[in-house]
Picture (spheres, rainbow, N blue to C red):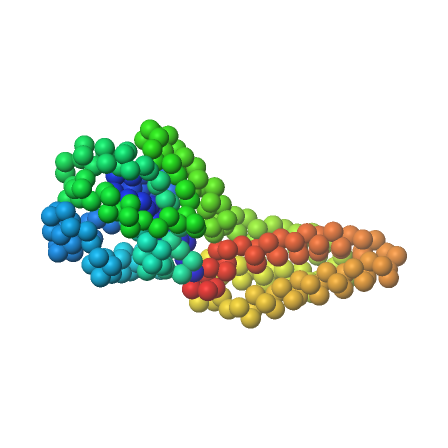
Length: 282
């Protein structure tokens, strides 16, 4: 499962292109203006002041969805400026978990004024009312007030998306690499601390570190059942070490429980990171 793309949505004149470019720059994502993907008949129809029907928009939405899906499958999420006025349109843009919608909320008066001041776009100001009539306000989107000054809207949108994507974006590869390194160090400590008790467990820790490295360089090596078995080994290792601690009066048991517990926590966190789950689900 790849990272999700972002769709900046709203009626004409809300600032989709401007804010979309700001988000793309802030996140280092490619930017695409949905208006550039309208087929010629749609452009001609809107230029005449005629509203598009659901049928008119179907192929256009499909092309945008395919654009996002293709980029996401290649590990490159994108930012798309697209009106996405109806819930059905937003559903048509779905690529699985994504995209993440950013709704630029604007008043009729502000939108009308901006469109009248815009001279190089095929969308006439006369269609603003029809867009507001069509609009179905989203409940699942990030809401940004687009009536405010442009700089403030840009800052608000970027901050809101970054906050939302804290839980959406995978843990960076370097963080996972650091976790793998920590596992290797702690297994070494555990092996030195209590070789008679947990040498087999230390070998398991090294095996996990090696497997984690393979995940970074080739997802073909990643299989759910191996990850599942490693998790089971972690649980069993903790359980056995705890039993040894309570049954043994030697220092070995006491020295073993701390690194083993830390290793288990790190491994659990590693298994929970979204980047690993995303790669496994690809």
